[in-house]
Amino acid sequence: MDVTPLLYLGAPVAARSHPGKDSGVDVPETRYARAADGVHIGYQVVGSGPVDLVFVPHDYSNIEASWDFAPFVSFMKGLTSVGRVLLFDRRGTGTSDRVWAGASATIEAQMDDIRAVMDAIGCERAFLFGIESGASLCFTFAATHPQRTSGVIVQGALVRGTRAPDYEAAWTGDDFEEWYSRIEREWGQPAFVRDLFELLSPSLAHDESLVRAFGKLLRLSASPGDAIARDRAVEETDVRHILPTVQVPTLVLHRTGDRLEMVEQGRYIAAHTPGARLVELPGDDHIYPLDDLVPHIATFVESLRIEQSEFDRVLATVLYTDIVESTAQAATLGDASWHDVRRQHDAIVRSQIARYRGREIKTMGDGFLVTFDGPARGVRCATTIADAVHALHIEIRAGLHTGEVAVEGADVTGLGVAIGARVGALAGPSEVLVSQTVKDLVAGSGLVFEDAGEHELKGVPDRWHLYRVVT
Image 1 (cartoon, rainbow, N blue to C red):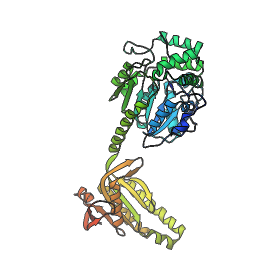
Image 2 (tube, one colour):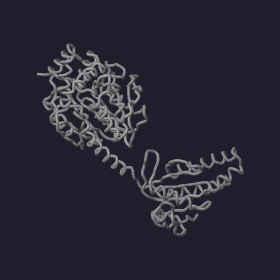
Image 3 (cartoon, rainbow, N blue to C red):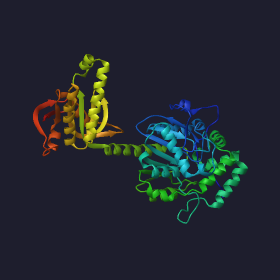
Image 4 (cartoon, rainbow, N blue to C red):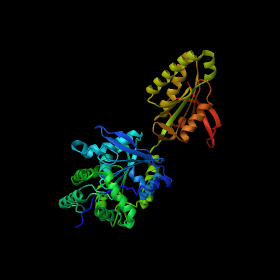
């Protein structure tokens, strides 16, 4: 039996060429994030876009050497058409600290490396793309941090290292021992490299430069001792119990002819992960080329992005306030005095927002944008503010509209926000104007309105009937 190793991320070609320089993808700078236990993790960021994708590699990787391997560069170019891609070397390999013992080698510690690199680039939420044993980290992270995981995508994945009665498409303990023995004898040597490359990427095995490059990648990624230590951890891996707890959307990609990680493993993962979608791809390449994965990844990501945007649309009452003739008053009072008035004004507004359970979105010049989940509270908040600021010898104008808004982090956008702003702009000193929608929704609340006529709102279709709050 031919014993073969587990997957790696990328391989460099001969030093005479650098595909990344001529591919249309800028080769990124390697930086370092520090995990919770102090281990330094090498990472790179490439591309931009509406979503973030974290590439979680297999055991052996070297993110710098990978940019000298044309199939890797081609795949990265495809992924960057989907979004911003975050690459990193797992601890103990490549550009990361070569620390691999005790607590630092656990799944929990490795999972924290994902969090560390996400934090380093200010990424709050991302899709995780994991290859082979990297899938185990993706599933563990997603189950532990669902609020930071947009979705999980895995290719040629495994979730248990050794064969079991209910998980037969895996190596036996004897297979692993034979593999460790061969690493000791032949790691990085030509016959070893060719056997392995023909198993991992048979469609590329005719290219001698890539075969040689693969051997270089193995040596740059890990020493023989490192490789054995890491694969012993893979042998002991079993995260099957985590799969039923994964509640984020999951896409399982697996080639039907994969001879290293058989398609039955992908089928097992999909069957035991709630709502997972399995796509069985033709061919027997375990790793590169991966370009045919990009359309499946793009479709999956885009469908979830659209779905999430729908989830992030909520009905809210939008309140805009603004100080009337603030520029003239600032000129009259002088900077210091006006600053003090503004400070007191802001304190009054914020106290009333809190009283009426509103949410301050942001300040704009001398005004506030606030949302409420109840229109009556929004109207009462506006009228209370208008009365309270009289003590400062200033007046505000306010406008309210209830409609659908899009929540984008701490901000809100959309037509509902635009309408609220336009209504506020039409209000006079100490006046609170509301749209017809607000008036209709607060019927029976005891609030009194008078007709303020129909108006055109700049940039908003149709004419809008507005009402003035009577206090």
